[in-house]
Image 1 (cartoon, rainbow, N blue to C red):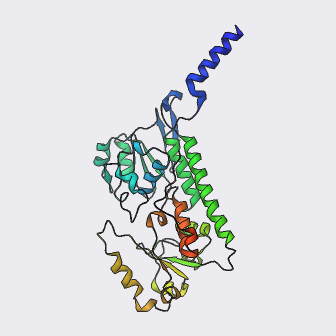
Image 2 (image 1 turned 90 degrees about the vertical axis):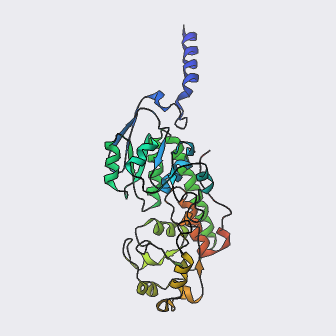
Length: 325
């Protein structure tokens, strides 16, 4: 009898796959599961979502990083813009592109789950829920740790917790590599940089860019001056900060915005001509798909900042994207 019992037990383990995470496939085999979002809302899933919609480029990137791009029913309209995105090739495979979709547009896509950051219009979130949709609210990240948490939340909603942890480990590994490279430079003094953003109140203390600067081994001049994220950064402030380097904007809205004209007018402004970075032409034009990234690919933003400050040793070849296998 004991022999028969052990044979049956072995057969059961083989059939169930020993309880291993299968990346979301047949997730309902273990019963329903719940996810608590950033606002404390609990959503119950009877099975892993097969159709996914996110309302931001960065959350699109997280879903792709989990290896689930085939579940996305649409992506952000900037996803295929090589100036603003590091996901161009992946986005080409997804037909629908969205920009601030209405509840009706979202409903037409028939997603099993919608991911929205807490900076989104919460009235729209409630409207979607009232229409019977599962909506998971993510934290608008101010730190890299916030991004780790968003990766875990999305992975949990997709019933792929282990993939989320794997993706976080890939993030940490890349950050450790950049840190090691910076430490090897044995810097006598860190470079002081300023991000020139079309969002003139972005880049101060308490934003994701500020945290990225810390990881890249540079001084965020705006933050060091005591300016908080959300405060307007005036030209007078920039002159007083007097950074070693300016990271310039490159966003052009699919060619609809004349960024060259904007930058020329900024750099030729008479009130800014005493700044060291302008006098010495220490200007860096980044890959904005990294600099403004709020997905796991923020690690490449950190490396891009190090590249701007410390040279070609940190340069990256081709579009970079962290993705689990």
